[in-house]
Length: 125
Image (cartoon, rainbow, N blue to C red):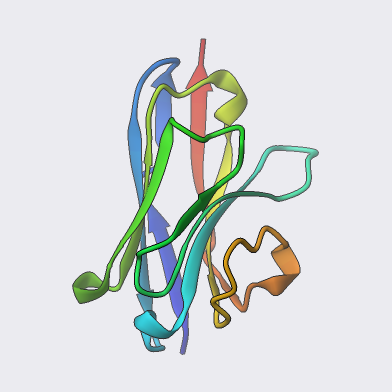
């Protein structure tokens, strides 16, 4: 059974940092590109960041570039999202996702095969 389990969300002040984690089980972690998406209330789910299978390539939404960093640890079957200089507009539920293709940037929700249940990040001003 495939599982993606996020953790690390919370309530913080603007300018603070958080690190989200997503532990994967039930499939070969190294065969999938991994990504983070987010969804605010009343909004569509949007792409945040993506890392290739081996971790060599990363991609970011313009809104988080320079503030967020995605990485993966194969030994722990875990993907991370390090978030810095958080802003109130970063408030959302954050989801990790797995994509069995490895074709560069892929911001489309429908392209991903597996999803986690989400972790809430709330940033107050």
